[in-house]
Length: 359
Image 1 (spheres, helix red, strand yellow):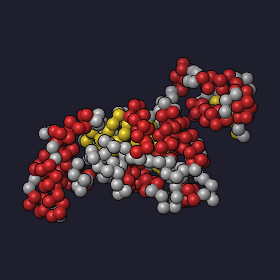
Image 2 (cartoon, one colour):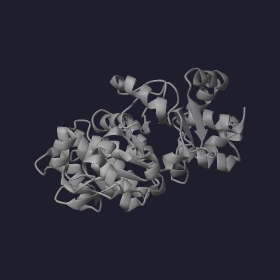
Image 3 (cartoon, one colour):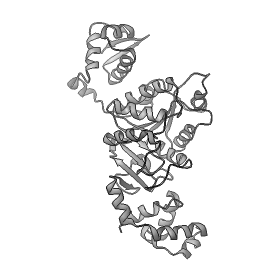
Image 4 (spheres, one colour):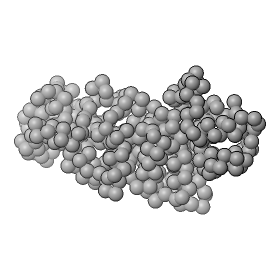
């Protein structure tokens, strides 16, 4: 066994965890030595007897060769914290996963990632806002991170895919299963252009206790976290809290003050989160280097048939959004979203009052 395979084996023993594994491997000198250390020495360094006995049983039954075969069969890879392709956004965080399992591909460009999180019981407003932010950000080559949960998470992943962008789902279970099960097909779609990731070994179920731990990876993989909706005691606040502890920027989308699902964003806005009403708020605050290169814009125009139509409509004079919709025969949400993207690209300018002109 190689050192990274001993790390894989150690991390599969859930009662240890990243901090303890780091302490043990540092104290004993390597993952190999830690894996083979006597029960007596484990007790001497402060591991309680119950955990030591459980570890002894685990390492006697754990077959690394068979485990690696299962990973290969399921097309699941793994990266160790010291590997060069371990996500940079995670590497230096306290309690970063020792092992990160992946299905699909992680890319260096994932360093420019935004997490979008919110309520599992989203409103129609929450869906609309999520789809707009996710599609526009993904259209700029920004990776969308979320947790594959029902509601806002699912809407964010789907919108990123619909925009032919990248999205990464962080699971609170082993990657040999999908939770919630109704997102099985969505998970398969994500793998084609993005990735599923988890710190949990094969066979580990989606327990409630896992999700707080999962949330730190959602925020840790990201440059910032955008909170769309959430109740007063929502798990969304845990993700925002993790983000703040990790030094990440937290954005919140304002909602109706009469809606219970506005409680989390309102709380965050009152306590230092930045308001986000469009994608420009996020890009400007973080100064993210997006894929659009102004020097290349003229060479690749039009970027889409819709952009070609809108540029033609605005060719002669500034027009109000309603006029653009009427002349183009496109629907209002599509025109509004596309004009926002075009403005960020530097193709059009919002003159105020819903009036746009071509640059």
